[in-house]
Structures are given as structure tokens and as C-alpha cells.
Image (cartoon, rainbow, N blue to C red):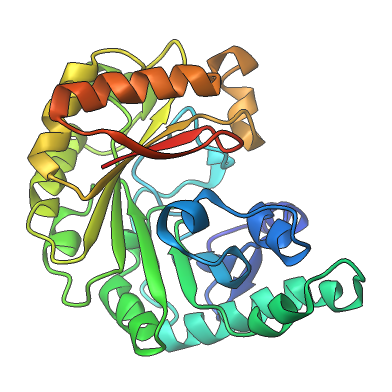
Length: 305
């Protein structure tokens, strides 16, 4: 078990539901999943990529595990483990079965909600997209390749978000995710060390190796940049150089949001306005020959292609 009783209670209170026997995998319903059910809006991923928000399963196979302690992360970083310490872990089928069941249990209250869309209520029982991005670094889970494969066999699309530290895991994936994300949150090693606060050696080199590996992927690829005002919204030309190395299909430039435990490390002033995100994204795009093709003001995110 990766958490003590107090930590587990706090995570469950905030909406996490753990699946399997070993306490490393969990589900949490997204704000936009709930909004979509009552027709009050959808996630930008539906607008950008056609992913239906009410059928999106937000999960992680490695909730406590990450090699970074990013200042802008919404997680409580006190339980972070940089390595996978458990010899035993749940298999992919157990995790997927448990995740679907847990999501349905979390959403069952909507069946008594008069405002819920009846068609969506029926469809949400069978989610079709796995956002493997809830918390932690998913590639630290020893069976991440098989987990993607399990979702693929069930005709899910999979969005895998990685910090790029497990280079060999990415390089040796046999099961392609539908869309692979790499987080690129600093234009230089100095800013990366200060903002992303890696807890392993060679982290900047690992990230750069993963960017190079991304260029060889057959699946769709995306670079995600979280903009933290006053911290990393500088040197667009350096971001452009790193993006060109990865040659992704898409680049998402998104505002840091002042939520969760990040409020203990940053301030509201670090959350940029949408127009600031858009201006910075344009500056990056101008440097690497990419244009803004979509945007979501409410989520403060723009898409470069």
C-alpha cells in the first residue's frame, strides 16, 4: 500500500477512487465529464480532438509515483515516490475493469438528476477514452505498455501524458497510445530545475531524449506547455527549438490553474490570463512555423498545429 490511512482518506475525500488490491491505481471524474452530462459544457479535448467528455475516463496507474515535484502541480507532494518501490502490483485488466466500475459508481447519482441528458446517461456506462493523466507519472507503472494494449483491445482511445523521464519505457512501447503527450514546461535546464524540481539525476537530458524519441512515434503526438506567469513564459525561441526536435502533431499551450495543493507553492498572480497564453503561444508558433488552429478561453488553452 502506497498511502497511509490519513493520506488515503484525504484523496478519497477529494474524489479519488482506488482500484485493484495494491493502492497505486485510481480514477477521479473530471469536472468536464460532469458538466457534459448536464449539457453545461465540454472539455477542450472534445473541441480540439472530438473526445466525448461524458465518456472520458480520467485515471492513473501510478498515483503516488513521479520523478518531479513541479511547483504548479495540483497534487499533495508529501507522498511522492520517485521510484516504483512495490514488487507486487495490479495487472492491467484488473485496473481497467476496476476503473470503469469506479467511474460508473461515481456518476450513478446523475441517474436521479432531471437535468441529465438521457442519451449521455446511457452512453457514459461504456467510456471510450482513457485519459491516463490523473496524477503521478504513468510510465513508472511496470505494465504501462500492456495497460495501453488493454485499453486498445476494448476500442478505447488513449491519451497518455508523460514527463519524459522513463525514456526506455517510451522507446520500447509496443502498443501505441492514441495520442502521446510530453510535458515541456521549461525552455532551459535552469528553469526546469527551479520549476519542475526533478528528484532524479539527468532529468533534463532524459526529457530531451524523450523529445527525440517522440519524433519516431507512429501515433499522434502532442507537446503540452503549462504556462506559469513570472516563471516559464520566456524564451519562446528556445521552446521552439525543443518542439522542432520532437516534431509533434500538436502543441498545447495552457495556463497554470491556481487549484489544489499548488496554492501552497504559487499565487493567483502566477495564473496567466487567456490573452497572455495566446500571445505566448503565438510567439512560440512564429518561431517554429506553427499556427493557432483552435482555442478554449474557459480552459485558457490554445492549440498549435
